[in-house]
Every structure is written in C-alpha cells, then in structure tokens.
Length: 316
Image (cartoon, rainbow, N blue to C red; front, side, top):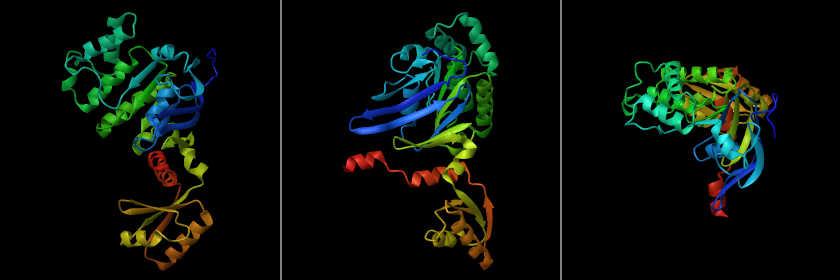
C-alpha cells in the first residue's frame, strides 16, 4: 500500500498479542493521523507498550493487520523500523560515552549520511552546546532526556515512540520536553506516547484509554468525558472525609474522588447528580460547583468498569 498524502500514519485492525495463556492485547483497532500526538493511557501492565510496538512493526502480532507509514506492519517491519525513533522509559544510551559519542554511535547504526555534521546539528538543535564532550552518565535526568530525544531523532524519523518519556524529571524539564515534541509534530512527525501519568496524557491531542488488553475508548482529548457522558461537581467545605463516606452510596454519585481539599463527584445520570447537588446545597454545609468533567475523572470512571485480564484468566 503506497503512502498517500491524506492517508493516516497508522491504521490497524484486530491487533492481538498472546503471551502464554494471557491475551495482553485483544482485538485492537486504531487510526492515527499524520502529525498527531497520540497518548496511550492506562495502568502498568495494561498492554500500552505492546500495542504501540505492534502498530509500528516492532513486534509481530498474533492476529490482526494494518499499515504504518504506508507499509504492512508484518511484511515490511524492517523498513518501518528505519523510519521510527523509539525513546524508552529507562535511559538506554552508554553512560561511559560522551554526548557526541552517543549521538555518533546511533547515527552510525542508522547509516545517517554526513554523520559528523548531523551530530553537530543535533547537539545544537536541542540546546546541548557546551556539553558535547560531557559523559552521558554525569547528566541530570532532564539532560539525559534531551540526549535520548536527540538520539531518537538523529535519523529524521517520521514516527516517534515515547514510553513514559518524562518520568523522573522536574516540571521545567517536562515543559521544555513537550515544547520540543510539539515542534516536531508541527513538522509532520507523528508521536505515540505510552503513559500512566495524567499530567503527561493531557499534553496529547488524542488519547486512547487501554485497560487489561482492551481499548476502552479513544478520541480527541477534550472530547473523551463528553463521549462517556460524564458530569462533575467540585465540592468544598468542612469534614470532607465524612461527606466522602456518605456520598459513596448516594444516588446520582457514580464516582467520588478526593483531590486535596476538594471532592469531585461525578456521574452519567445528570438529572440524578443535579438533584443530589441541590439537596446537599440546601443543607448549607458544603459548596457544590458544576464543572466540565476532565480526563482524570474519565480515566478513573473507565477503569472502575474494566476487568483485569490476568486475574480473570488465572481464575478460569
């Protein structure tokens, strides 16, 4: 299948992966537009990374089919790998080599033309000037992250895979990293992000929620709560712990989550939730404020209804 201008970067149907007796990815369908930043959100062990690797030809599926960058994910996996940059959660470059040496090594692996000039350019583009001769092992978490991204992009890939990319870095380094990711996406690079961190997921344009091998929902980040039909109130006031216990069984409160000095009370039956809020407001103890349901409320709501495939299959 030749890659056309309007074709998606990735299109897969029915992707399935089985390890032993456990189905870790079960009938996964997805289309990803070129230049999108797509987040795969779910708990550890939910199949996020396995799904992404199958979508990009890095892991052979046991079932299903699809195309990545116009290439068949099974038959053309070698060609796909040449056009993919993969940043793992754990820093995987050589700590006893310098920044420049690491970049040169990766460039050599990919057969990058004009390799030396490309390394100099990569150092400059990501603000690593003055550090090219520094050993990678002496870098801070944020600088290691920059180096890993530079190495992933040294061969100018069309697709970038990020596995928990900002784990363990400070807020400024995280913000700088995502600024760079958005610049890459603006240039047409498609970005897939595997994460279980909500503050990382909200950086993505689109999100797929994955739990225990199944896709629960996917769509534009801002539209996910609306797709579920979730409504939320923020509750403030005294003795929230007692109120939280009371609301656990209250009609209309499908979900009660504590966020510091607030309770977020959510449900899909808006009439019942509004009635609950009206009754509680009449008591005059707590303030109830309607808000648009967010990604975190949506994620917790979806996870509450998901079944652990490991426990289910283990009990069978």
